[in-house]
Length: 270
View 1 (tube, rainbow, N blue to C red):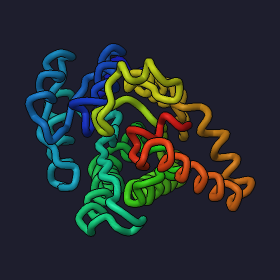
View 2: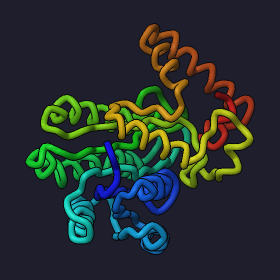
View 3: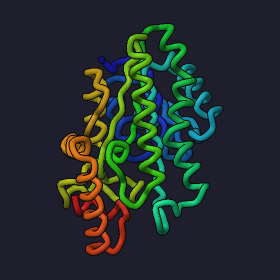
């Protein structure tokens, strides 16, 4: 897929992976519309890349429809919708200890926001027999994020929804991709690009963006910015019990070495 002249909407685009993708797509000649709760940084980035910005709470279907409308007004029909917004809240104690509010927020941001985006753009894409849906999930959606059951469960659901989209609509001319990065240096877990220089398992947002653009350009469904995730997934599918036992050991090691299972520390152990 050639991105030159394409209209691309990106949620959660004011920082992290979203901002990196906005810049990367813009460098390829695409027209970018950024949706984010933080209007000022979104607008600053939009001004930088010649795009547009709109306040967007992805848990509200009307906001996503407004994002689509803004993109169409500025640049024409959306060619690619990137569902990138995410949250990571962690859990205070046992695996079910996160509040209903946290579970609901994770569900709305990681799953329903993707559903809302598909509802907003799929009919026109199917009619044109052209378009792409890009979902930014997580390696946790294939494996598991120790210490954050709500995040892991909803990222699994995000991957499943992407599978449903691909199974149902690729023959309609709609390309579907789901990216599942592992640990990366983003504000979501309190890390900066400099942190990625000190550990090989941690990568920068621009590296994820590069992998996403490469994967989307060749029509890949599963995009793995950390290639080793494929090996972990193979181990999981080959012997599920052995994989669960290994994850228990990793959790115990995290608690022993760092005193917690926080993502900002877990990356040091893989």
